[in-house]
Image 1: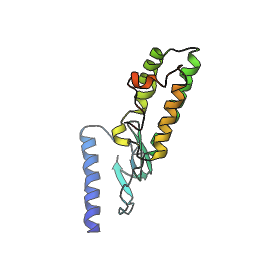
Image 2: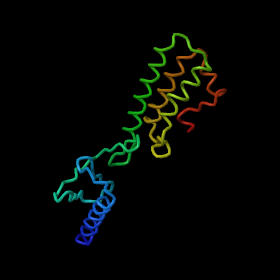
Image 3: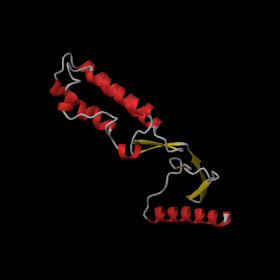
Image 4: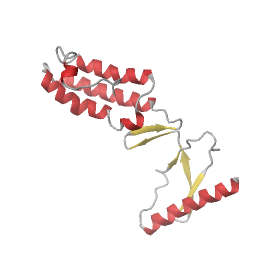
Length: 165
């Protein structure tokens, strides 16, 4: 069984390389990584032949793909913490840029600059842990302190909390 799996793996990589050569889209093996998601997978080493050279493909435990950080255990706490930190910086720059900000302008800035980034691809990394939800709620609490009397306005402006999403 193990030999059959290894043969399938080698055939798959050979087919990838031959297709990339056919379409003249060569692999850059320094940018290629392997991540094992299964606990059963024995963390095999992968090699790719490019330009008649055998190149080792590095293993990784964390990969950023289209803006979402995937980890080996498929827990998105790292991604949520990174997104919350980034959006805290955006909220800080909004606070520094405006001496006084009314609710309408704040709502537009919040929805376009903060909320859009916090909700990006959230169907993939939807927070399950309470600590992750608290990270996101902390960004919203910090943002609502900018505009005067904004807490009552959350419902009026259709801005939901992280727990509601």
